[in-house]
Image: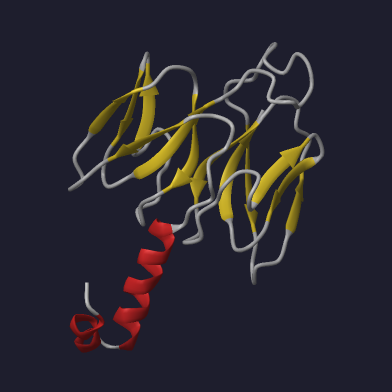
Length: 169
């Protein structure tokens, strides 16, 4: 798209378009786990083959991807809809946290909202027994685990503008 075509849009529309482009173009490199990209185009549902328990690794769309709302998983398959486009990874067993994390897992977890404002790091204290999952991103900034959010047994941290709702198990 040429800059000449964007100029008639005006300053705020141009800024919004550039921000949306920047969000979708962020590349954080590849992690140790293979990633599966699943994308809903024109708000249609898309099914992607997927083995293991899916975790959202990187959101590609401006539309926020929310588990059990516009993305989810069924046996051997991942689905996205309503404009959600994202990269997913299979959760690894024992991901280096501590032994036995899958035993007696509370399926509902505890809800926690943790938000970074003005790109500052924020610690949100809560007891983590097994795992933390990002379930709803609230910020325009893409929240990527081990990049601008993470956790340990004392709680969740966010930084660089990541704002999200988490489930703590």
